[in-house]
Structures are given as structure tokens and as C-alpha cells.
Image: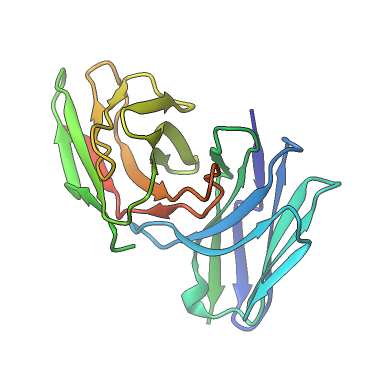
Length: 113
Length: 116
């Protein structure tokens, strides 16, 4: 089955700096890669996603890049703000008929004022 | 998302007891999922269902059971066979596009289960 590795597990940046979180996946047939933000005790919320036919997608301060050859994708947050502090999860959806999402273990991002 | 309701928010289980977590959605989504979240472990899939009266085991199904008698409801029972049930449980759903479920999953607010 699919295996998703996420790095780093913790990331601390100064307000205004950029943050980058990286994920690798094992199943070359995976075709959908969402990123979720989870604040403490709350539900994960989708912040951006990318499909395998696209190499990059941007939404204001957030961008995701996908390298299918290397089987890795990354989340980029620019001009970080304290409210960006949360746990971020990447995920990959396998192809085939089951469409399961496999999640990385998460990155705790802390943005220091 | 307001369309997925999980209850209760907090639940306590006694030794040898089965407990049921509720998940209801009014998004008319076809597929529903149950995840378990432990600190440092990310989200792990317990069970999922893509259609009424059908469901499949996920990666950690042992000690859990589900039913899908209605499209909008997907309750999860944590049985006494699950020896380490303390965790945060998240329900999610997604819609079908043609024959594909390749759409974002939306989550409920979760249920935190603890052992008494």
C-alpha cells in the first residue's frame, strides 16, 4: 500500500519568514495530494490540494509543488503569521478503485512573533 | 465543516464496554471514513464506506465495527476487543464524481475517547 513520509516533524520560524514542509510517497499511481491544517483539538481543514496532472498550485501565501518523477510534494507558506501556527498534514490518494487517503505524521509549525 | 456532525464530543469507556460514536452528514456525500488520531501518528484509517450497505476495512480495523444503513450515517463501534481505544476519532466524507471519489475529504469535529 501507499506510504507517506513527512518532514520535518517540527518547524519553528519567525513571523514573516517562509516555511517549507516536504512529503514523499511510495505509490507511483497516486494522483491526488491534499494538505490539511489542524489547530489544537479541532478538525483538519483542507488548505490546498494538487492533482497529478499539475506541477504547482498557488493560493495567496500558500503554494504546493509536485514532482511525480521523484514522488515528492511540498507545501510552501510565505510571509508567515502567528495564526499559521498549527499541525500540517500531507496526504496521498492511491489510484485504483479504493481511493483511500494515506496521511503523513504531521508537522507542528510554530510562528514566533 | 458544518455538514458533518460527530457526537459526543467526549466519551468515556469502562473496561469490557462497547461504545458507539456517531457521525452524520447532510452534504449528500457518497463516501464516509473513520480515522483514529494519536499524538505523533497522523491520521490512520479504520473503516470506510463508498456506498450504503457496504464498507471496507482500513489499516487498523481490529477492535472496531461499523454499519452504513443510511447514506447520511456511519456510526463506529469501539468494542471491548480494542485494548487501547484512547484517541481522537475523526469522521470524514467525500462526494463521488462519476465513478471517482477523487474529491477532497471534509472532516467532522471529532470525538475524544478515554478509558475510565
